[in-house]
Image (cartoon, rainbow, N blue to C red; front, side, top):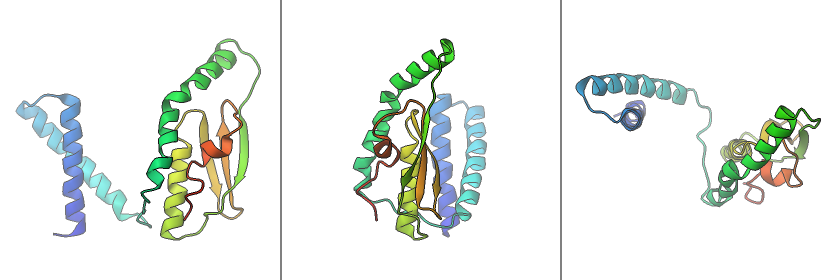
Amino acid sequence: MTGHVRAWLGWWAVCAGIWLMLVDRVPLAELLAGAGVAALGATAAVLVRRERQVVLRLRPGWALAALRPVASLVGDLVPLVRVLVTRGALRRDGGGRTVELPFAQVGEGRDETSYRVLTETLGSLGPNTIVVDVDRARGVLTAHQLDPTDDVAQRAMPLRGGAP
């Protein structure tokens, strides 16, 4: 069995499972609709997979670094609500802040690309801090904070210290 067929079957199973969790019904019509939707999802996933340029390699130590950004999903709600109330409802002046931070992992290798992708993803996970760009030519990461904090580098680059 080729890699594409195995990937398609795997994605079909994942999509079908998600369908069943969402509809929570098993009449034949629902199962047939779910099988069709799962086939479309699996086909799309395999087409996207075929276009990838690098297979990402995640290091086990990076899993611990992911805990803080996951916690920021809830923790950043307080500053988000504060900004929505003060700037949105009360119409007070104020603004976010965009900063450029030195970022050395700009190479094309598998490890550096994996590090960069995970940094951008985890750095943008919480609603207060968004990684806008990694300028590989200049070696800088640009991040925006809705409600500026003193630890923008730690929030935008949660993998610091675990670089390849």
